[in-house]
Length: 117
Length: 110
Image (cartoon, rainbow over all chains, first blue to last red; front, side, top):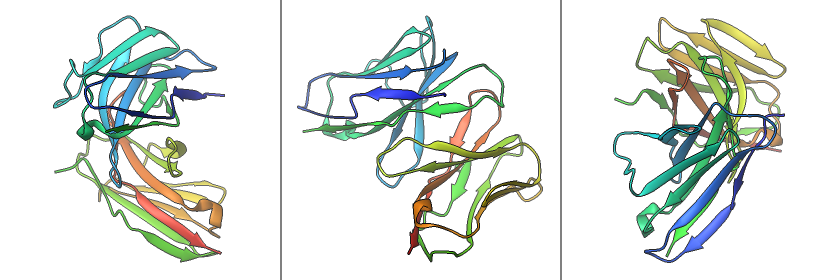
């Protein structure tokens, strides 16, 4: 149980284009979904937190107009990188959590590797 | 100052060795402590979690927390090549605020 999927697993795009990444909780309904970014040899950095039907809460320094998050249902969240540039190349990982207690676990997806040429 | 500091390694050990992975954290408000394992090009998976100071054991893995020193550790006994991965410590204050260390890359050599 508690499986989170991401699609695509990797994507290459040209500079200036937009890329959409999907995150799905397959066997549970997630109260909250999170989006992280991980650069090589660095830790996961939280980008934003989203609840179904609400606007996402972005971390300081993350451009909300560049990284559009849509949380359409309790099992699906999407991250759209708009007008992507080479510096946006990274490993994007989502997680999903049931409940709002400190003991509630975040279950992570397998990640999406984005390369912007 | 980062919320969580972790030695990035890399760390190489022979099969069967005891591995010790460590993190320090800055904020005494952190209440919940976790270790995640991340294989290359995969998302992290939760290994262990604990609330309180002391030890928590699960098979070959032992998580240790010392709140007075703000120090958390993960010990792996009888390490196996399949344990080769990056290990991330993480701490939480509330329901959503999860802070990760940079991760320690471990290689267990057969």
